[in-house]
Image 1 (cartoon, rainbow, N blue to C red):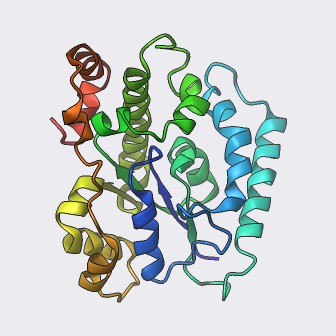
Image 2: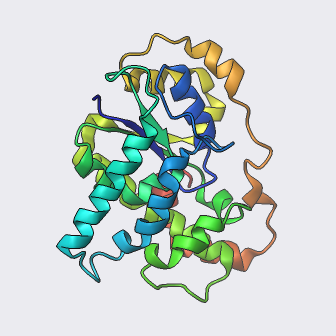
Length: 250
């Protein structure tokens, strides 16, 4: 079995189009998927384990929990791969929340490839897609900023999640980790698609054709600029400014 290609991000960052690019490159990403291309087989696993895993430094995982988590994950993989056309076919899955479990996933598949999609944290702070922020925010922030305004809290979660993922990928995964800024994908679609294809190593797909067919800049790009609340924007800069600089946004 080949190691998987996994796509992760803060939800709402543009992973849907990246999943479709990966699929065009010949990677099986599942048949049981949501409209956003998330692999359904992993949803309940992520619901059960993300918060517990993120809190493992404060409350260490018992050996029994680790064993159960691995067995639970193995069952998800088996269900997901049931209809893989051939045993050694390229495969993987897209679920934005994968970035919160990157270290665990990498332990299970040391040669996996991870595509980390990053979108401007100021846009993400005002996204309508805040469900997972609410579901995992307390675990990501380890209890901090519980009383902060929603956009500030969302920006802080964006910063912690993306920086932790980026640091782990650069430190432990080297050439099997790819960070892709969503804005760059929209601004330079052909080059960005080619970058993804090169990362996948075995694809002969037509980057220009894929870019033309799949990539459209959303109208929500730069929505933070339309926010008139200077106090909120200053607070976002306070809690996410370093991460925004890390990823080239300011």
